[in-house]
Image (tube, rainbow, N blue to C red; front, side, top):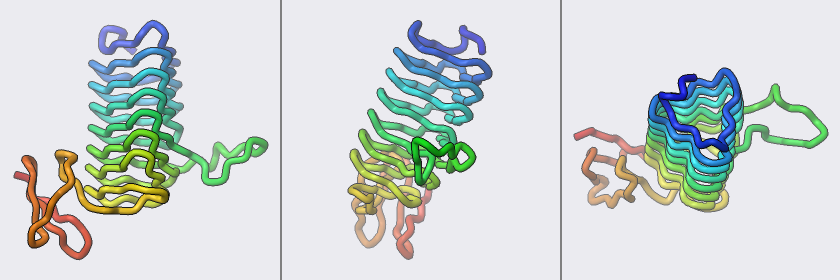
Length: 191
């Protein structure tokens, strides 16, 4: 670690063997545990825990009060809203050690998880998907899907901009791409 490449508030705790990218900021009372990898330009908010072997890509934004558990991988440009929750074991018990059973949870490029949402372990959230505040996600999420509720259900599509897509004849666009719904999936053509 090179203290000149990133900022860590004086109350942050950073364990040994972490890789932290240039320009990353780590704020008050956060704990970065051993053997995790944090990319360039990330922002780790107040009271965040990044557990061992977690991987965060470039430009990941982690808001206050988030615990990112072993098994979580966030690709570039992921947004984790305030107090959202990850799990890493399907059937936890205080009296049974299940560290060998940690599930992999993958958040693809550009997706957003809203405040107070819960992400059950072992799933993949597709690129640019948007998980609404308070949702409970317990299965894989398609790219660009807009998910809300408990359990979360898809209610529409969002573009790269994060705005809900309004379709006319199964087609929509935003500043970044053109979109077409084909057989319940979204076909995306970059501009």
